[in-house]
Length: 162
Image 1 (cartoon, helix red, strand yellow):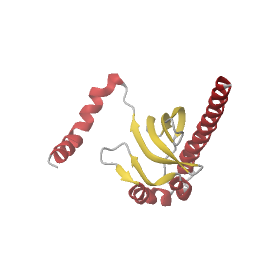
Image 2 (cartoon, helix red, strand yellow; image 1 turned 120 degrees about the horizontal axis):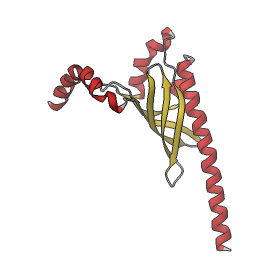
Image 3 (cartoon, rainbow, N blue to C red; image 1 turned 60 degrees about the horizontal axis):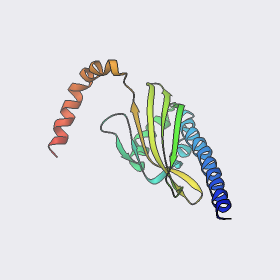
Image 4 (cartoon, rainbow, N blue to C red; image 1 turned 90 degrees about the vertical axis):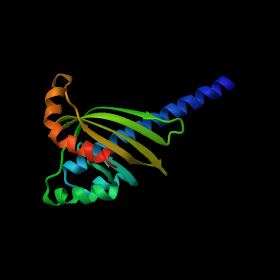
């Protein structure tokens, strides 16, 4: 009897995780699509109220409000971004209320990597933390470092003084 009950709990838990994984994939795809289709409200409604968005530039570490203010002119002009997932992996904590993911994206910057954390608020998944980064082929790291050095050396010096 105990084994049967444990097996049933496992099956239900697995089914719930699969349903949540499907839902999260749909949410993330719709989120990226909302940006591409210049739908400001739809895009920002997916972010939790105290979400953090970290962009590709070292200075881009924003609260939801800061990111929304930064992005508004792009949405107003219709010059947003278009990210499409090429690959995505989703994981859950034991409670089933926290999920994290990583994704490879086809973007105007070529392949980028997104990663983030979602939290379940009631029955709804919200993005709590998102990080966007550009990928750099290993053989090109030295060339990219030379390009970044003048800008980021100044930023490193500034941050070290804090």
